[in-house]
Image (cartoon, rainbow, N blue to C red; front, side, top):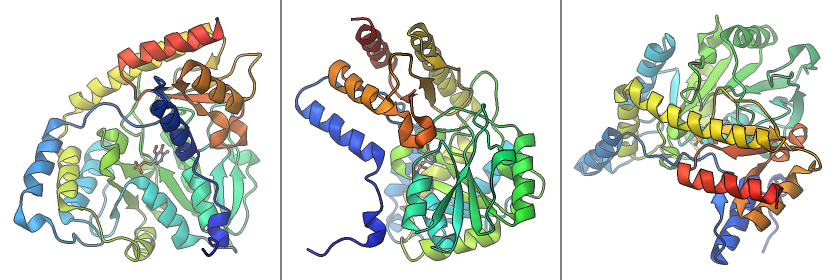
Length: 386
Ligand SMILES: Cc1ncc(COP(=O)(O)O)c(C=O)c1O
């Protein structure tokens, strides 16, 4: 067999693929693993969305290619959502591009803009796909430092003239940090001034707690000059397996992303676009609030238990994770995660998977039922105090 390309040989195995393999091995050995490592919603999407999928899937005309730009109905639904939710005008023809999940767009945007002569700025703690996309694009990575609230610290950021993209993500995975529109405006102004693409990864905009409502970066003044935002239905409507999201914003960035994408995939199933449009336009706000109140009570339980064990932990106001600093004598997050998995059969994510600044932290997901969560927290307590 030939060897893989140099590009792929530099690509580490995706951290969650490794954890999943270990979990599967333990499950196959009959171990009762409880998973708090995955950001996958455990609850179903709104019923109307499932009904829409079923009805469109039974239509004769639903089974052909749907076009590289998705269906007009889905693009219009995304524009309508941005208008209603954020008060932002979006042209569904030029400023929306449906994606097969936002992760797909994250990687393809990098392929569209980056190469070995450019660089990308990535927050020192961030969703691993940004770094993997940079490696696939064979581009240099520049650190975007974070302040003590996990917000970009532009005063300590060393901007390079060849940096083409800056990633941000609020509400944040893994830290749960949230950002104000004022801080987003500073980032937009910076990117407009330096002619850098501001890539705002915003899949958790609708998962917020304690009356906090997340902004869109596109609400900032002149944002469309250099901002592209990634929205996703995965977490917003509990549709992670449906693989549907969209890129929204700067028309040139959308066009260039489409240029790559149209050479890679041929759009999604029409029934998925129709169901996605239904989720965006017909889901009552009460459905979102009810779902968030369930996550919020799980958040509170996790924070209470971990604080009691001496973890340093804050209540996150957004996203679906609790980010916690290990109590002494523990300091190595990878070792801690391995021991917890093999000895207590509870799987959590190691902080260092999100960058070296995440060392000494773990991330716990809120996407687990109350019963399983109680059991997992009980095991964690028992493991700490045998
Ligand atoms: C910050 C962030 N961006 C993007 C994604 C990918 O989401 P999608 O399911 O839309 O590909 C995730 C998934 O966990 C995420 O946490």
